Image (cartoon, rainbow, N blue to C red; front, top):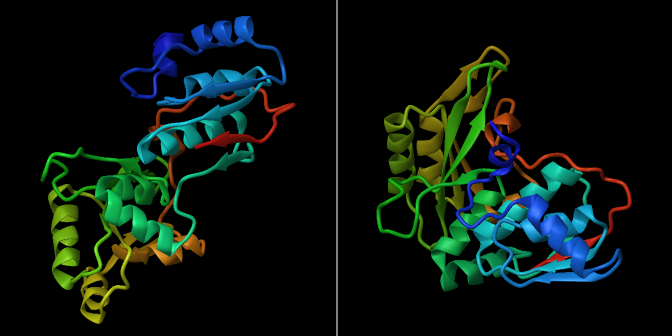
Length: 248
């Protein structure tokens, strides 16, 4: 695999980082502000961060924003300071996003559990899967969990049954149900009826229901070791002299 291939993050219009570094170097100085109003997978802001420029990146989709956040944290470390504007900050903001665009809501919600977005906007194209979480329960074999997101006000036990069926169909080990509305008693009971996913290192509820409010409070899925190697990652960069930047 060449350096360029290793750099690819799966974004169709991604440009080589070396090219953007040359452009940023030639057109700005350290401390200048670089603006990318269509930042896609974030190559320009990556180059600006690496070259110690201030930067502002803008993109219309939550899919792009999530990808850029992950890219910068992979490259510059989890403590890299990024101020993200225009994303839900509370349950009310999440509800507004869900009402405005259910697909943007799904992409945003999937990012809360560090899942990979799945499917597209074609009705039924995702097969009941909104995201995937990969993990290594024994540190060796890679397994997956199915993520299903519901942003409507009315949720019911049938949705949990559908997730259980999807987990079985896809031969996944776990299912994560993210809901904006509070789950009903029958939903909680149905999830519990799926039993436990047992590993050598512990047992975990096979089907887990998490509300957006719980995710805002810091709750995360109970899972075995998450394997970062299954994600396409940006090369780790020098983290010295980095400043807080903005992503919109």
